[in-house]
Length: 165
Image (cartoon, rainbow, N blue to C red; front, top):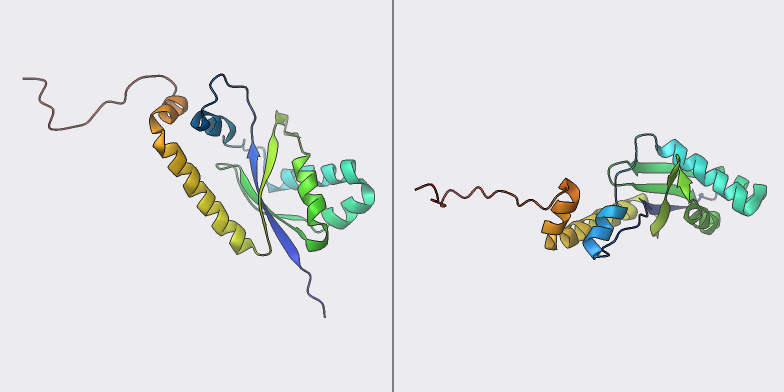
Protein backbone atom coordinates (compact mmCIF):
# COMPACT_ATOMS: atom_id res chain seq x y z
CA UNK A 1 0.00 0.00 0.00
CA UNK A 2 1.36 3.42 -0.96
CA UNK A 3 1.06 6.32 1.42
CA UNK A 4 -0.11 9.64 -0.01
CA UNK A 5 2.55 12.26 0.50
CA UNK A 6 1.64 15.87 1.09
CA UNK A 7 3.35 19.22 1.30
CA UNK A 8 2.43 21.98 3.70
CA UNK A 9 2.70 25.54 2.43
CA UNK A 10 3.10 28.34 4.97
CA UNK A 11 1.92 31.67 3.55
CA UNK A 12 1.33 35.27 4.57
CA UNK A 13 -1.32 37.59 3.18
CA UNK A 14 0.17 41.04 2.65
CA UNK A 15 -1.73 44.23 1.95
CA UNK A 16 0.36 46.44 -0.34
CA UNK A 17 -0.10 50.15 0.21
CA UNK A 18 1.62 53.24 -1.02
CA UNK A 19 3.52 54.90 1.79
CA UNK A 20 5.65 58.01 1.69
CA UNK A 21 8.40 56.97 4.08
CA UNK A 22 9.92 53.60 3.21
CA UNK A 23 11.57 52.74 6.50
CA UNK A 24 11.61 49.02 7.17
CA UNK A 25 9.44 49.15 10.29
CA UNK A 26 6.78 51.33 8.67
CA UNK A 27 6.60 49.04 5.66
CA UNK A 28 6.28 45.99 7.92
CA UNK A 29 3.43 47.52 9.88
CA UNK A 30 1.67 48.78 6.76
CA UNK A 31 1.77 45.45 4.92
CA UNK A 32 1.19 43.07 7.85
CA UNK A 33 -2.25 44.10 8.98
CA UNK A 34 -4.99 41.85 10.26
CA UNK A 35 -7.30 40.20 7.77
CA UNK A 36 -11.01 40.98 7.91
CA UNK A 37 -13.33 38.49 9.55
CA UNK A 38 -14.98 37.81 6.17
CA UNK A 39 -11.88 35.89 5.12
CA UNK A 40 -11.85 32.36 6.50
CA UNK A 41 -10.13 29.10 5.52
CA UNK A 42 -12.95 28.26 3.12
CA UNK A 43 -12.69 31.55 1.18
CA UNK A 44 -8.94 31.05 0.80
CA UNK A 45 -9.49 27.53 -0.53
CA UNK A 46 -12.14 28.76 -2.99
CA UNK A 47 -9.79 31.51 -4.21
CA UNK A 48 -7.00 28.93 -4.60
CA UNK A 49 -9.20 26.58 -6.63
CA UNK A 50 -10.42 29.45 -8.83
CA UNK A 51 -6.81 30.54 -9.42
CA UNK A 52 -5.78 26.98 -10.31
CA UNK A 53 -8.64 26.68 -12.78
CA UNK A 54 -8.11 30.12 -14.31
CA UNK A 55 -4.33 29.87 -14.69
CA UNK A 56 -3.69 26.16 -15.30
CA UNK A 57 -6.95 24.72 -16.60
CA UNK A 58 -9.45 22.12 -15.48
CA UNK A 59 -7.03 19.20 -15.45
CA UNK A 60 -4.55 20.76 -13.00
CA UNK A 61 -7.39 22.25 -10.96
CA UNK A 62 -8.78 18.75 -10.56
CA UNK A 63 -5.44 17.23 -9.60
CA UNK A 64 -4.15 19.96 -7.29
CA UNK A 65 -7.35 21.55 -6.04
CA UNK A 66 -9.40 18.49 -5.21
CA UNK A 67 -7.26 17.39 -2.28
CA UNK A 68 -5.94 20.80 -1.18
CA UNK A 69 -7.04 21.79 2.29
CA UNK A 70 -6.55 24.85 4.47
CA UNK A 71 -5.20 23.42 7.71
CA UNK A 72 -4.70 26.70 9.58
CA UNK A 73 -5.49 30.36 9.10
CA UNK A 74 -5.23 33.25 11.56
CA UNK A 75 -7.00 36.51 10.83
CA UNK A 76 -4.86 38.34 13.40
CA UNK A 77 -1.52 37.47 11.81
CA UNK A 78 -2.80 36.87 8.24
CA UNK A 79 -0.83 33.62 8.22
CA UNK A 80 -2.02 30.24 7.02
CA UNK A 81 -1.01 26.70 6.15
CA UNK A 82 -2.35 24.79 3.15
CA UNK A 83 -1.93 21.04 2.64
CA UNK A 84 -1.62 19.85 -0.96
CA UNK A 85 -0.38 16.74 -2.79
CA UNK A 86 3.38 16.51 -3.18
CA UNK A 87 3.10 15.96 -6.93
CA UNK A 88 1.32 19.25 -7.52
CA UNK A 89 2.66 21.59 -4.83
CA UNK A 90 4.40 23.76 -7.44
CA UNK A 91 1.07 24.47 -9.14
CA UNK A 92 -0.46 25.27 -5.76
CA UNK A 93 2.35 27.71 -4.91
CA UNK A 94 2.06 29.39 -8.30
CA UNK A 95 -1.72 29.67 -8.00
CA UNK A 96 -1.42 31.18 -4.51
CA UNK A 97 1.09 33.73 -5.79
CA UNK A 98 -1.24 34.69 -8.63
CA UNK A 99 -4.18 35.57 -6.35
CA UNK A 100 -4.45 39.37 -6.36
CA UNK A 101 -7.84 40.06 -4.74
CA UNK A 102 -9.63 38.47 -1.82
CA UNK A 103 -13.05 39.65 -0.64
CA UNK A 104 -12.70 42.87 -2.62
CA UNK A 105 -9.29 43.85 -1.20
CA UNK A 106 -6.04 43.98 -3.11
CA UNK A 107 -3.64 41.43 -1.63
CA UNK A 108 -0.31 39.77 -2.19
CA UNK A 109 0.24 36.20 -1.00
CA UNK A 110 3.81 35.44 -0.02
CA UNK A 111 4.94 31.82 0.23
CA UNK A 112 7.08 31.68 3.36
CA UNK A 113 8.00 27.99 3.58
CA UNK A 114 7.20 24.59 2.08
CA UNK A 115 7.57 21.55 4.29
CA UNK A 116 6.75 17.86 4.47
CA UNK A 117 5.16 18.14 7.92
CA UNK A 118 2.78 20.62 9.46
CA UNK A 119 4.87 20.70 12.64
CA UNK A 120 7.87 22.12 10.78
CA UNK A 121 5.68 24.85 9.26
CA UNK A 122 4.30 25.75 12.69
CA UNK A 123 7.77 25.96 14.23
CA UNK A 124 9.02 28.15 11.40
CA UNK A 125 5.98 30.45 11.71
CA UNK A 126 6.70 30.96 15.42
CA UNK A 127 10.39 31.62 14.70
CA UNK A 128 9.57 34.11 11.94
CA UNK A 129 7.07 35.98 14.13
CA UNK A 130 9.67 36.28 16.91
CA UNK A 131 12.18 37.71 14.43
CA UNK A 132 9.61 40.21 13.15
CA UNK A 133 8.71 41.32 16.67
CA UNK A 134 12.39 41.71 17.53
CA UNK A 135 12.91 43.86 14.45
CA UNK A 136 9.91 46.01 15.31
CA UNK A 137 11.00 46.32 18.93
CA UNK A 138 14.34 47.85 17.89
CA UNK A 139 12.48 50.74 16.31
CA UNK A 140 9.48 50.67 18.61
CA UNK A 141 8.93 54.43 18.91
CA UNK A 142 8.13 54.77 15.22
CA UNK A 143 5.99 51.65 15.35
CA UNK A 144 3.99 52.99 18.29
CA UNK A 145 3.36 56.18 16.36
CA UNK A 146 2.11 54.16 13.42
CA UNK A 147 -0.06 51.83 15.46
CA UNK A 148 -1.59 54.41 17.80
CA UNK A 149 -1.55 57.31 15.36
CA UNK A 150 0.20 60.46 16.34
CA UNK A 151 3.52 61.75 17.46
CA UNK A 152 2.61 62.08 21.11
CA UNK A 153 5.09 60.98 23.70
CA UNK A 154 4.05 58.19 25.97
CA UNK A 155 3.90 59.47 29.55
CA UNK A 156 6.51 58.14 31.90
CA UNK A 157 5.39 56.49 35.10
CA UNK A 158 8.60 56.94 37.03
CA UNK A 159 8.07 57.32 40.77
CA UNK A 160 11.49 58.87 41.27
CA UNK A 161 10.55 62.05 39.39
CA UNK A 162 9.81 64.85 41.92
CA UNK A 163 8.82 67.71 39.58
CA UNK A 164 5.81 68.70 41.72
CA UNK A 165 7.88 70.19 44.58
